[in-house]
Length: 316
Ligand code: ZN
Image (tube, rainbow, N blue to C red; front, side):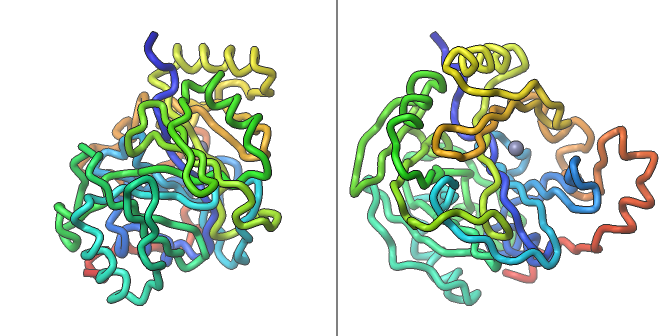
């Protein structure tokens, strides 16, 4: 039977200054800003979506930048590291690039046969680049990072938990994940085992309690094809004893949410309809997009948002 869940859809995190956030993810990492909208629950805060050319599921990192927010703290019950996939031959390029831009990174960590560079954004958000030769996605570039070295999308995400058994049971029995292997206390799962669908459970690293604020992940979303498969996933999760929300319309996908046994907020989001529903692919991210209910107050909402400039070339 085809899998209902096919990997990571998006990861949503909290940030502080919106311009620094835009600069880091478009300028330093070279991701495309595919949507500039507002936090539907807090319309005076932006919601930025970064991804590949079209914002394909499995490439999308999103942020709510709260100006002036204090740094959060990585801890148990959180997605602590978001890992992007780069070509195996691009490791030296990225080491040089990060060093040249003043971003301190770890010495490469060996993990399941791949080399991993770890660093943080200006808010302390944990980012990794996994140099691997298993990614067939094409990447995307503004021009300042050669296409050959560009980020391909997510590789994986690390869930930091106190114990793994109940989360593992949920992933493998209700969410189409399979156990792939264990290395140095890192338990790996995949729907297919390819970059973009991998989840690692890491126990107690760091062992502190997570404090959600700038630089921490708010939730991780898994992908499902469409509204029909989403309802089937919802039923399976209910049967598994999870408290799952009703389907919520997020304009570019629909979502259901639930908290996994270790306390991390999970979402299952649809691949459809995607980010070109209200903007041409060539112009994604250029104008402020509002949900229908907010359009009547566009001037007021836009007036409260800090002006931002897309300037990836500044980080060439
Ligand atoms: Zn989400």
